[in-house]
Length: 162
Image 1 (cartoon, rainbow, N blue to C red):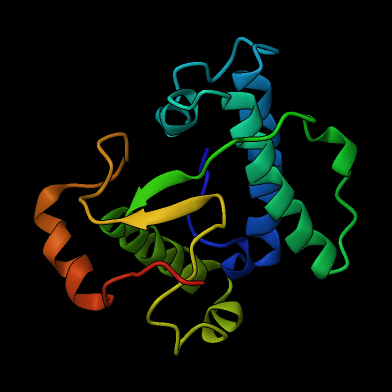
Image 2 (image 1 turned 180 degrees about the vertical axis):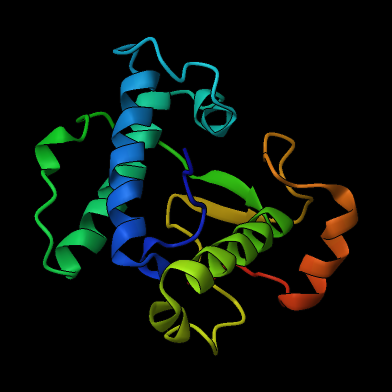
């Protein structure tokens, strides 16, 4: 499961569909409607919110809007009606890690889609999040501190965008 902190516009069609499905699964987990994935580390940042179900629903609304923008027919009625009362934080280095990770995935899966973002040095964050200084999240799998400097050199610092 990958709940991206990046704006969903960067995801290729396959990635956007996967995010929708994984987001709906995350919603079910956070609402106590399934017994699987209950300890998934990606869900910790949602669980720490006053309204975990509202936070993931807010997240899914943006994913749904991106799907609508592309002409897809994701069913909005699958999104819980609860809403978050505040933004979640994501660190600069977490966002850079995800950007690097997504670029590697797209290089293998859809180089033509990746080419659309070749000039992007400061990717937009998913609107549910606000960017704050800090390291890669401790819940992130697949990250080892020695690789950190390589990621930081490849991608310019991220800043909050309007």
